[in-house]
Length: 474
Image (cartoon, rainbow, N blue to C red; front, top):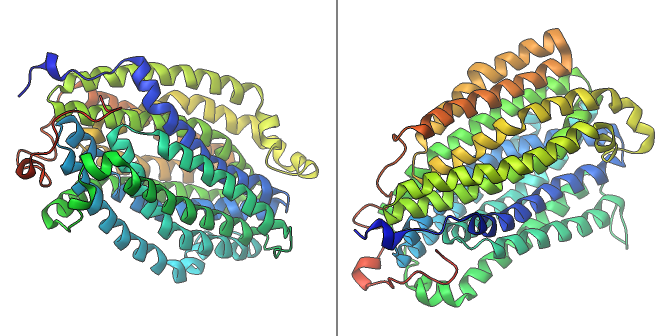
């Protein structure tokens, strides 16, 4: 193995920012899609806003499983890059494509069950009807979303985050234009209302997903240096390794989102105004969440590359630097959330509806401000452990906290203190997860050999893959 000096990675603040800011822009573009849906549909009234919020949570609950199922592509690619075995990265990409096609079929097969699932929430009849229509379309679009995730994770593993960033921005712009046409019936298009918001998102995801994969196939780096077209074959061993690595992430995210879905159902039972307010605040909070997620991607990539290069302590140092950057972002966002809660709430509804939601603004944003640091810590440490291939421990922590602490506390809190009680249960959940993962990260149990192992994941050793690090990859 090379000496630490010869394999030292660039973990400077400059490189961390260069790696993470495109991810932040990309994720904010995804957030913008939810905000666009919320703002535009909010013009149709509180009931429509509540329906889109509920439909968004339920849709993401299903899609989150497949988001996690494909997250292992990032880890395998990052570790292959760190070990300078580039053709192994190409093999991992294609196994991710095959897994995503299987996932897309499962997503589409769940559409007939949507009315039954929405009915379990106990929301009002009008909200249930609108939610079912919106959610059915979102799941149809979700099939293209899971395919998009493979390309996104491949680029992240390479340490190249700018292409997904531009794809994300394009997706938000296309979504905005289609929403305008399909929600309100402009330029001769039918006025589909809530359903139009779903179609706008679904079509945008399909177009941009195809474009992202086209860039991978067209890039000289992946075409020639990585041997992308030489390594397209189905490799059962690598496919199983990818699935084994990713399945705990999928179960973790799915079960946590299940807890969030129960939380949403509890809020929906309290009232349409409470559900609309919750949707508005979470959309505003999502900006901070996506910032934390972007930093977690940086942690996954840098820890994965450090493990692959045999210098895991470099990954630990990188994570601490990533947290320093996150603290600055959290402080700025905390000031905005704390000083302007009513103004933020007003962004999502018409002026004549603001008075219905204003009483909830300050109490809910107080919970957001209190949660910011712990949410950041949990996201970044989850990403770090994922980069090392340590996916089972975060899964157990997340599921345990979600169902043994969060859900019971939300039920009890809503019974005694209404909407605020349910929200403070969410704060307890975030704190518990962050504290336990920090304890894990301070030890050495998460540091393990590369997931690829000595036998590799593809044909790099047999075919003598290039040993020089590709441009832009430290």
